[in-house]
Structure formats: C-alpha cells, structure tokens
Image 1 (cartoon, rainbow, N blue to C red):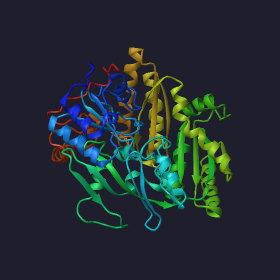
Image 2: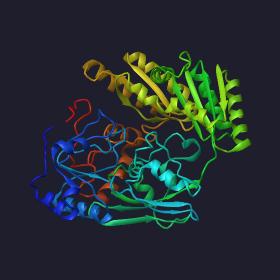
Image 3: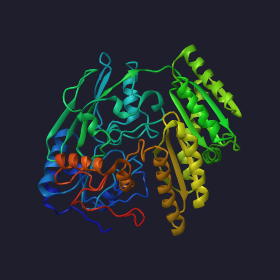
Image 4: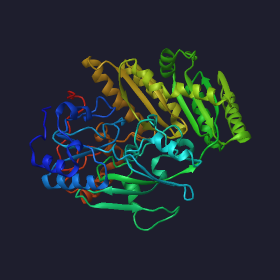
Length: 480
C-alpha cells in the first residue's frame, strides 16, 4: 500500500490551527504505529494524519475539517481491539481519543460516573472503588483498554454471566456527528423512555455513526471478595452438562470460564502451574455474593461438577489463591501466542450448545491440520477459538483463514452469532449479511446514510456502503 501523508495538504494546516502542532502528527514513521489494532492480520492502511484531541471542541473541529475536505476519519482508542475496528484507512485521519482521559464526575447518590472516552477501564474501576462502587464490564485487556473502545464494540469480559456487557451500563452519551454537530442523548435517571434509544444505537457501532466524546455510566455496589472454584473434566459433554445445570438450577456465579486441553497445555507451558495436562476441559468459577451465600453458591456448583463426573474439583475462599487460579484463564491468549501467530475468533452460541461447539472446533482443527485452542465465557456462551499458525507458510496461512470461516459457520449452525464482544470490524464484514440478512443490512445502511451521508466515518468497517471503497482483502494483505 502506498504511503499517503498530509504534510502539505490544506486540511492538515487547518487541523494544526485548530488543535495546535502537538495535536496533529503527519510523520509516516509515527503515523504507521497507529495503523492497526491487536487483530494483527486484519487489513490496514496508513493514516495521512494522526490527530489527538483534548476536548469535544477539538473533535468538532476535526469533523468539520474532514467534512469540508471529504477526508475519512477513523476513531481509535488504545488499539486493544481484536477485529480491526480501528485499523487505519489510506489517506484518512486516525482520531486517537486517549488524551480525553478524565473521570468528570462520580455520583455515589445516583450510582453513576461521567467519563471521557480515553479513560482506561481499570482506571475507572479504581476511581469509583473509594466510593464503594463498581464498574462491572471487564474485558481481558481491562488494565489498558479504554472506555471509548469498550463502547465502540460493546465489550464484554469475564463477569458477563452475572453483570452483562457494556451497553447494560450506558445511561447517556455525547457524540460528535460526521458534520460536526454534537449529539447528547440518554439520561441520568434510572428509568427513561423519551424517544428512540439513541445511546444504545451508538454502542457497538464501531465508530461508523459518530465519535463518542463523553459517557454517563451506571455503577453497582462493590462486590464482596470472591470464592473460587476450579474443576477439570474428561469430556466436553460433562463440561456442557455443568453449564446447562448452572442455568437451569438458577445459580448466577459472577464468573464461569472454560479452557480446552490445548489452552490448558499452553498455559502450563508458560506458567509452569502444574495443571492437569490430560484434562479435556477446565472450568473456573467465582461467586461474589459474599460470606456464607458465596460459599453455598460455589459448593452447589461444585456438586454439579461432581455429579457430571469431574475428575478434580477444588474450591477456595482465599483471595490470593483465587487470583492464582484465575490467572491461568487470563493467560490463555498470551500462552497460545507462544505457538505462533494467532487468528482469534469470537463466536457466541446458546449455552446448551457449548459442548457441540467445542467438539466442532476439535473437528475443524483436525480437518485443517492446525492447532486451535478454545477459551471462553462459558456462563454466557461466548467462545474464543484461537487458531495458531505460521503466516510465512502460504498453505498454512490459507488453511488458517479457512478454519476461521469454518468456525463462524459452525457458530451460526448452532444458533449462534459471529461476534459476542469483539465486533465485526474489518475481518467479518462478509459474514454480517449472512447472519442478519438483506433487510437488516438495508436498515443498517439507511441509518448510516442518515448520520454520515458522505461515508466518512470508519469506512469499510462493519459493512460496505455503496460508493465507499473497500479495504484490501484480508488474505491478500501485506502489512504496511
């Protein structure tokens, strides 16, 4: 892909006049570092300029300049995404929101916080903890991903089984539209049904409808210290039985995670944690109900594991030991990355079909002669099959992408969805219509055209609009 810079363009000068010289970067050696997110094999171009606003007024100025000159804009947070949602487009402006990182308000009486999009997820948790409050959404990258990015892709995390996903905590948003107008939508009250729920429309839109510049978020009372369970199983059927029984018996753990044998062995290699390398699956669960209630909840879950034929069951109310047990789950992706480059999928299936999905991924790995490790949020059915391969081997690379498609097809065949929390981005554009159908896709395009008629916001992401140039195909990508 050719390098396109904005050093001498009139719009770059206008941006510097509006934001100052330190707010506009045009050196290709610098801008290239903002070209892609963590989906390393997703298509990416080279931004002509990287712009770092400090205020809503700065974002307004950027969008007004972009609209006047017809320059595409790609909003970006910390770059922790896994679907290429914030990957650059050649010749475009990449709008990096990390300098807008203030927690503007914490209201214990109303259990809400008002934040800018550059606030790191963990920083928000820390900011509200002193008031005895808790912001539940917890992506695995919670210690460096930003709230704006979480809002963009409607991120989930390990605690979704009890607490839900990002959209469940959005009360209101401020967003700058493509033409520079500022939209304020939502509320500060617990209830409110005045007009369309525009705030929820923007959550998960991956920067295609507007640039989120402020969010009003609901908070929860701080949870109690968790009680933890770990169990291993000889078959996926046993693991699936436990998940089903958790749902049907009414247990609501704060966390219920699964790892397959490939992940168990990879984590054991990395951490030297003396894990059971013969186990076909490992479940990790927690309850933050507090005191005796948590102990009872975890013991009930332990009994379900024993009834299903678990080979090993261990529970602890020691927070330090619980953290160690959970570390194995959190290190699954870094451990798999030791086996080669990774294609990380993000498929959610009905919880009753988890065992079938795990078995299906094993079959795909065998058919494609690849290593595929599956880790996921068993409590809500959101699985993350991770394909490990050598991208320098053309045949292996092609088989990896074929396996990626096989997994998406498997998820849909089980009544699932192509993405549970990472978003469509640029790597699943072709799969969106297959899931939602042509009528729903037409509605998506109508909404996009109403808010961004020139197609300037994050072009090529989520779906392709008429008249907007497509990004390069993933398989033929040569990284800049």
